[in-house]
Length: 210
Image 1 (cartoon, rainbow, N blue to C red):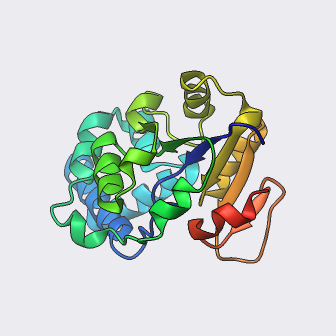
Image 2 (image 1 turned 135 degrees about the horizontal axis):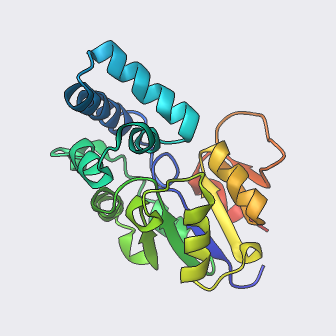
């Protein structure tokens, strides 16, 4: 492949967000729904999960059904006073990313302030040409096609030039439908049809792509 454009998801792709960060975000989102929709904790948690499963992002359901201000929601649900203690940094990540030829972009459903803070803590922020966060997609998060097409336009890349590296199968399905090459970061054994390459973690990436 000549001059690929590597498109990386952030959470659970470039770092492991499951132990500390995702639980914090889930609690913050549930609390937000409790406050702004006058729900108890059980109702708020159920609605958060329902929208996430139905639309791929809780925010999408809130905007569609409740007129939630996306900037307000994202700011209040992505506050991390102790972020430096929550991000699990793998020292070899920088070496792995530098070994990949071509341009690199982060494409995340998270907000800009959070994505930049995480990349800085991972010590890889300077290796990316751009961070495309949910604000740049007009709050139409993956797997909506809008953000994928925005990335391709911004970097004058065809889908065939793009390699999407992502832990979410739904997002990879969208990338594959557009014609991108797909890399699934997943420790399981199955390899669905929309996945070109499966790796256990991003450290395996240089040896997995031919």
